Every structure is written in structure tokens, then in C-alpha cells.
Length: 114
Length: 115
Image (cartoon, rainbow over all chains, first blue to last red; front, side, top):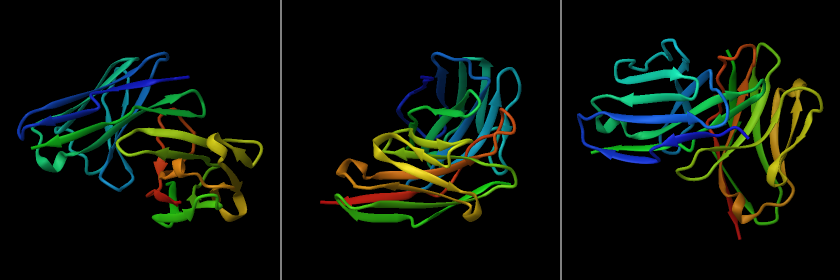
């Protein structure tokens, strides 16, 4: 089946630094990638939708300058958290459309900013 | 706009008992409905989905759900709970009208299974 590989699984960074999270579609072409954020014991909140070769569409309230999304190829989408602060600590998950009815998810990245 | 309401943020059942997790949706177009399970610090695993056709959908690990349009519901059931079923469960909806449509998730229900 369709697999999205997400790396890293967890990362600890210092406040003020930037962190890049990668999602790769291993056996299919991901035209569209969705990025979600999940706070502890809460649901997944859509941050942005990225389409290969075009600018990402951000949800209301999401700072596009802080959360940079790049979808330069059909198999790779990245989320860069710039100048990270402790309040950016969260679980980030990517998701790609697979066919008409399907969605597949990455395994998630636990970001801790200290 | 679509939305999902999961009734009960926490459900606790005894091992071997019936599992019932409730999900109601709101959608202006025919919905496609999903149930996912999430274990701590992991991604989401698809349990089952309803797109078209038969309204009773069977999924993995003995779970099933029934799409009831008149009740706008898609409740998840399992006849006999197992300890390994303890996890967070999310109901989600998509209208599938375009390739750019994301899933919209409910708030989740944490299932505890008591020995």
C-alpha cells in the first residue's frame, strides 16, 4: 500500500533555531500533502495544504512565515519550523491523498523546543 | 463546511464487552467517512471507511461501522473489547469533491479497556 515516510520521528531543538520535517511518498506520487498539528490529548488540526510546484495554502491563524512548507517534487514535502519557541512544541503529522478515497499518514514528528 | 462530533472524550469498557464509539457528522454534500486509531506518539492507522455502497462497513481488528444518513451518524463498534484496543480513536469526514480536500477530524475518543 501507499506509504508516507516522515522524518525525524522526534526532535529536540533550542529556542530560536529552525527545524525541518520531511515527508516522502515512497511508492506513489503525492500531488497534495496536508500538514496537521496535534497538541497533547487533542485532535488533529489542519495547518496547511501543499500542492507540488505551487505555494501552500495555510489555514486561518497559521503563521506562514513561521511554518514554511515546500512541496518541490511529487515525492517530497517539507515543513520547516523557523525560529522555534517552546509554544511550537507539538506533534506534527503529514498526510497525502492516495487515489480517490484514500489518505495515508506519516508516523508523525514529536517536536520539543527547549 | 463539514464537521464531526464525537460524543464522549473518554469511554471505558471491560475486556470482552461491547465497544461503541459515537460519531455524528455534518456535511452539505454526500460525505466520505473514516475511523482512525492512534497509539501514543504514533501516526494514524485506518480502521475503516465509508465511501459509497453498503452502509455497514467492516474494518480491521474486528471493528465495524454503519453509515446512517437519516441520523447523520457513523458509529464504530466492536463486539468484544481486547486490551490491545486501548487507544485514541478519531472519526473524520471528507467530501471528496476535489483532490485538495483534507480530512476533518473529530476531537477524538480515548478508549480504555479494563481487565
